[in-house]
Image (tube, rainbow, N blue to C red; front, side, top):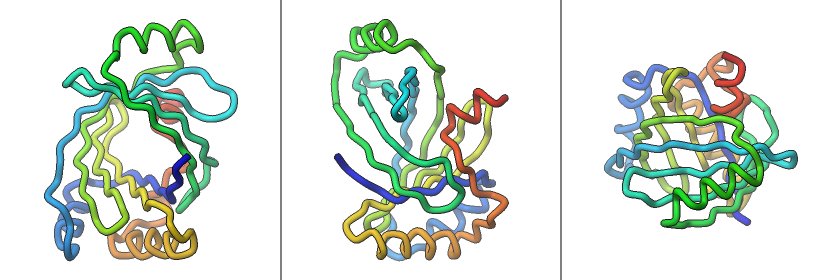
Length: 167
C-alpha cells in the first residue's frame, strides 16, 4: 500500500504551466498518453491504465470525494499482458467507463504535478504529494495550491470517471 495527498482542479493549463516551470528544481516534463479503463468496484476505484507501448498498470485506490487536499491509499500492479488482463477484469467486475487523457508530468520534490487534457472534460491540474509525514505533505499541497493560485472554486472533489458519468 502506498499513500499520497492529492488535489484536482479545473484549470487553464497555459496559465498554470507558466508558474509550474518557474519552480526551483522542477523536472523536465514527460508527456504520457493514458487510457484508464474503470471497472465496477464497491470498496474504492479500480482501473486498468493502458499506455501506447503495450504496458499497463492495474490501480486500486480509496479516496474520499472532498475538495482540497485529501488522502488517497493505492496499490499498483504493473503488467505487459494488457489485452488479456483487460478482458479478464471487464468480465470479472464489469466495465464502468473509459477515461482518455494526455498528461504532462512534472516532478517537484516529493510531488507529481500532472497537467491533464482529458477527453470530453477539458483541462485539469492534479497534485500528488507522496506521503512520508502526512502533516508536512498537506502543507506542501497547500503551499503549491497557493503558489499556483488555485482558488476554492477551481477544486474538484471527484475522479475523472465520476465527472464523465455526470455529463
